[in-house]
Image (cartoon, rainbow, N blue to C red; front, side):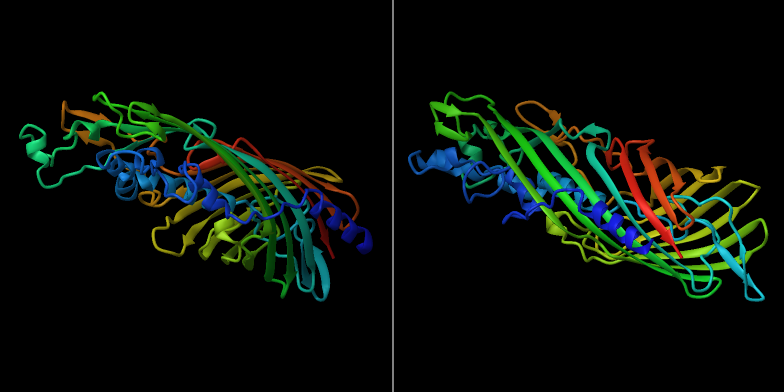
Length: 448
């Protein structure tokens, strides 16, 4: 039986094609969508800066770069950071599964009838000397960013507000401190992004009953992330007979549109987790426990295989049993180390129900509610003073909270006394953060 279990685990782990890491990291490939010349900076206009143009035109090649760094550049960082946080937040299996036991006078006594929840926790522990080993594979593609389709993200990069000696005189005495003087400051660079990010995570996890009331577990995720993106850029002129900002061509025959495609694929170990669960109270019907789940930054954040910071989840767990029906509730706090990270309140509620001798249904509402304001800050609207007052919104991404609320619906099937087959679908119930339309999970668990 153990040999068959190991064979099934190996087959599930290698069922996806292994990607080959590209020389260029995936985070760098996101920035590449904003670069339209070899070896240049994001938003650099190689056409305007070419040496064949007059000096008065060449200086315009860098006018969007300072704007990017000071204001709109946070859009690029926002997308990269949201990706890193989302790919590392894939849920892993519960610390206990199948029947759990306590020992009375050296005799094991069952403390649970159903096979337990899938992505939630129950108050029971495994029991001294017992062990759970599992493997599951979650597959998904990101579809929205704060409710906006990943295939249609709109960005607007504005011009640097320039001021130099003699600028006022060259513009009829108007103050160049005003945004929009000279008039070419009103030109913008509009982007439409189409991002396709797919993630496959195979998690190997084990939990060991140290005592009747204390379990310790380890989770090792192996992750494959694929990325492809397309950007379409358009420079919108604003007055003048000769173009000052263009991707290629000449001032009298400029190319004002550009397209960039990039893709990459990585494979490696994600953020490894260690989990400790302590049962504080247990009766025939109810159980209360405390769980600490520490995730370490072992995944390569530049290749979108990990978050890049230490993360600690601490939760209180309560569960009950009424015949074949077992409700449970989890509540706690998620701490993310590192400057500029947002913490969250965790809340999960649901039930697992024994439908038959070999089938358990598990249903949960899983939530992660942002504490305070998001540290993923979008740039604020830009106000132009001249030639008339107007406001430009730099992105179609909404400025909303990144609360995550999902519905989890799955089944556990008893293939034998010790082996469970796990299937689950995790569906978003709101549109905060970067989300997939569904996260499908399939796994195997072996308890002994």
